[in-house]
Amino acid sequence: MHIQQDLSAAPASEALKQQEKEVREQYVQIIASIIDLIKQQSKADWIGYRDDCTKFFFARAKQRKISTYILRNFYQNLLGPSNSTRTAIDPESRLAKFTQCYEEKYYQTCPGAEEDLEHVFFKCGWAQAFWQEITNWWPIPISLQGFTSFTNSMKKIPGPRRHRNITLSIIAAAIY
Image (cartoon, rainbow, N blue to C red; front, side):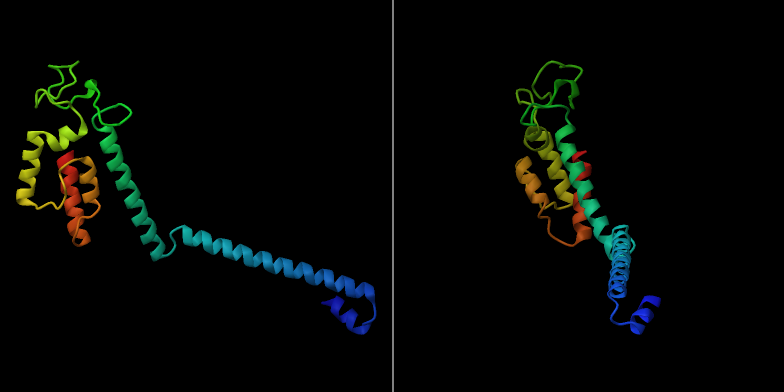
């Protein structure tokens, strides 16, 4: 402030003009830094779930990520380690009668059928009867022809969100 008073008293002084210019640039830089800091703080508040819209958005994204992770791990790891195609089942983690037939590769409920995800969950007579019993009391709008058609039809379950969540819960419980 005193530089501007001195400059108004002696407007021809080049040293005062230069000094006033430097002080003004420093002031502008300080103000810009303060504005940047406020922007960063507001962005951190927004990301940190400070408002309702952000809480809802991140909660939905987190729920979808967790359900996808659980479903993927369920199908890949439920029946144990497998070969490169992720369909064969390790004999050490048999689901049915594993103590009687430890080294065999065939499914004990259906003799002669190879034990893989498709057979255990969709092709086996026991699995088909199980799914039929469930669809008798809760009409599940999904395809039970195989793993690929099953996962594709799960993405397209019609109806309100509450109905879809109930259907997905029934499917998860049935598979478990």
